[in-house]
Image (cartoon, rainbow, N blue to C red):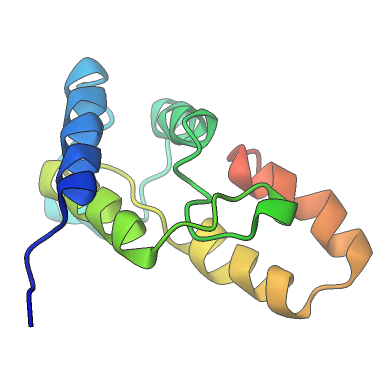
Length: 123
């Protein structure tokens, strides 16, 4: 069994790292305990998450019909690992829990109303 990341996955990590270098800001990336608890929500962090959404990285595993990429979960993992290593905000509650729950169980109104907002980090 091969547990190494594929060349495509390693290329994605390089792209993510370059993006994070470009947007390096101590108000966004902070390894202190309080920040890592993911309870810190600031305008700069929310704007940074919007940029992740613009890159298509907030909906990596979502179905295309809801604005996602239908990508493999390993890419979401790799993105979260890179963000966590720098103390940045991670993909979690909105995209991971609420969004995926709406996709699986929400009615059409909820999906049409909230899924685009989640991918743009507007909620």
